[in-house]
Length: 406
Image 1 (cartoon, one colour):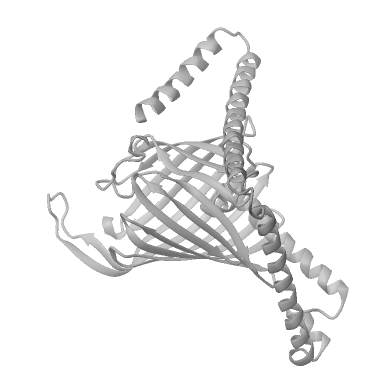
Image 2 (spheres, rainbow, N blue to C red; image 1 turned 180 degrees about the vertical axis):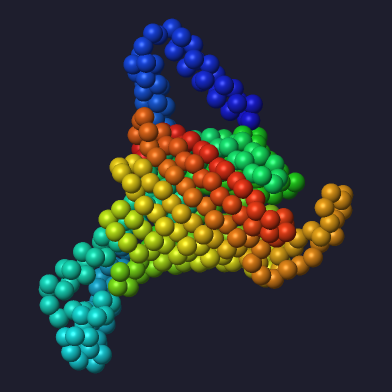
């Protein structure tokens, strides 16, 4: 598989160069690239539609004598909405009768029912604006949070180079894909995560020697109850099956959007692990966003608890161009580090506290075509592994998108 991917990449470059040599104008080459990209995107969408249609027909054939699951899902959703409305109305009655005796208090507390229609409209407008800004930033920078929540059908090919002053440099090609089921089940999606040149040949193979390097392939199921958004996943990492559950519940408090996200995972390889992220987002201006991220995680077969604090600032300078500045602190309650260097079997010690301080800057832009992005991310870290001496790093990557994307 790895050989096939490399041949495809090299062949594409050779074909592009050969075609460029045979045309004397840049417009001819651009036209060829546009047609090639359009062809690949249409193929991605076509394959997604074929799989979706086939599954839909198979489910219809096996459910001819039962209630349509789409109707069941719609009825459940409607029932949940009615329950939520009923609970909200009951809460509103209780608040108006007991908790809020004056108009002034209602104005200060945005989580309560305001006494006038004007206040309700203004509150909704503020909340919508903050949520839209958060979504816009996450979508542009294509972070993990956005990729876990988007409903787009896409294939992202990322070519990345990584350089550092301490340690080895690296080059990689990563593929990430998602295909929602719009016909068979609107809440289902096929996903492929972290497929690289190095692990492409490890699909459906035993990866016990490289436990965290194999790609994940499976199906997401999205559901929600009241204000809690849920996603359940089942799939394979190599030949090791896993199940995951992800829950989040965005909350608006004054001018902040707070989004706690909890992830649970169990696999036959890594056993049980869980992860918590809490995002505090505030819109600074029409072009900028401030974010505080709290993180913690544990894993059954690894001692200690990981934790981190990150302060992030994002700003869009113009359309399809933006930058971010991040200051992060990473720690562990039982961090293991080596006390000897250049030794075959070095001794290790445990340390409880912050072991890495990272300051980074990122510049991301969409250039040339709407499906082509580049990002440059210089940073400096002070890691206990290197006795807190500065380690200068530079990440440069190019993203190519195929299918339906934003």
